[in-house]
Image 1 (cartoon, rainbow, N blue to C red):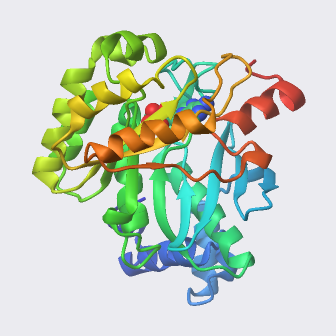
Image 2 (cartoon, rainbow, N blue to C red):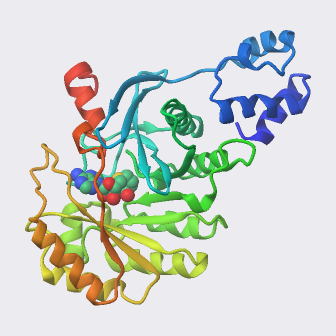
Image 3 (cartoon, rainbow, N blue to C red):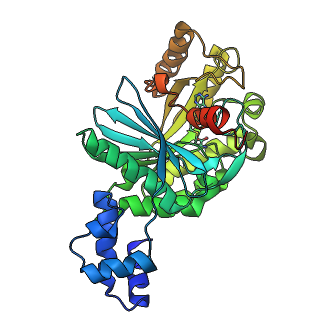
Length: 345
Ligand code: SAH
């Protein structure tokens, strides 16, 4: 519930609306999931709330802690579905990578999240729970609060647009987690209408686009979505996004040996995006057993980034975190399904 919805809910039950805001404050700021602990509410109200608005909490089915400080949580929701959340410690703060769907419909060749297809969308509350569990973990570790969110976990956020926008407004709530829109990144495989809608939303979130190839032939072979929204159309939408919002767009480019890592690919990429407000994030691909794709040698990665930089295109190679805990892209859930449950495999 948003604050307005909580107030309305309380009013509808003949209760004082500001009590709804207090309850949300406990949940968002303190991660409290039990009315008994909300000690600024009268005890008869707490008992009544337990009946009219029982609080649910996802259970943490698995926790993996990496030697580098990265933590991966696997949350299990009440219907038995699971989603992954990753907590990353950077020098500028703590970021949380949130999943927007259980599974994914997009079927990218290199991605573990899409292997079993889409199961269902996550609700705004279920996405919020990921952040609340992460915040609890962050507090327990004595670290700073959650400072940024990336919608870069499993799922395609633009396919769950309304829920994602509502989720962002929940974490943005100034009496709750208070995470500024500028510190929220939405990553999309390139759903052009979603990008255009987001540009018109009037919130200054950061857009990240999984490009991975500079031409239709290579991109369509990796990402079926390219057949619906080809490269030129996608990049045009990104340029427009940057123009309308003034925000720099990030292009994700996962380098795959012998597929998209040649100097010709680099030159095409430069021609495609040069002159727009953007940054290229090069990611040595995480090998996925099912897909049989490998990362290039370190010198090939370096030449690729050097070509971009020399042409005036801002580019960096993504620092890797959590490789020892299957932190990337749906890997933990797949392992969980395969080894321990086998429910959807
Ligand atoms: N559906 C959204 C967000 C989830 S994927 C999107 O496509 O952007 C998050 C990022 O991880 C995307 O850039 C995706 O392309 C990338 N990714 C998926 N599998 C990967 C792999 N095996 N190695 C490296 N990056 C991968």
